[in-house]
Length: 158
Image 1 (cartoon, helix red, strand yellow):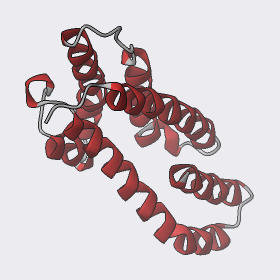
Image 2 (cartoon, one colour):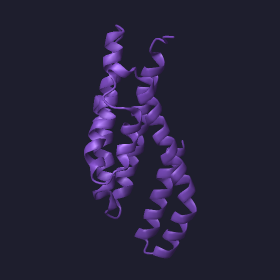
Image 3 (cartoon, helix red, strand yellow):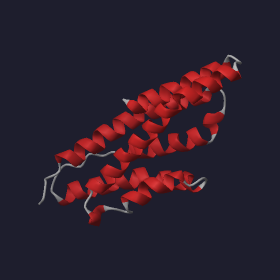
Image 4 (cartoon, helix red, strand yellow):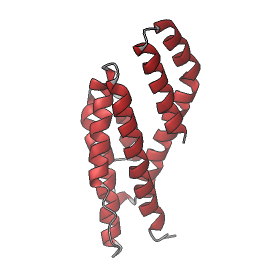
């Protein structure tokens, strides 16, 4: 929900900019900054916890790297195609090893990675950022609902 609020603030700022009022957009962005920061923090916590829920033998990387490398400029363009798709692959591998029917989230992971990169690059084009942002929110929700659901359905081992 907080991720949706974060996206909505970004969209409103962009709409105000499209209207030509840069000062109002700046003020609104500044007022919305705490919500945006909190949204990013919680999104990162969710991603980290999903990676942590995977047993080590199914992890491509550590949870810290999975999240932290997304903040490295330019490298994050590559890392987006590692962090989300490899999480999906790890969940699928674990489900197969447990004899369960795998929840295939690879397409959603790849789509989210593409949208992440688009938001960093062409998402800065006025108006286009809103469209990319809407798609990103929808895919984010679908992806994490499936991944978290799959992880929660896994047998608990003590």
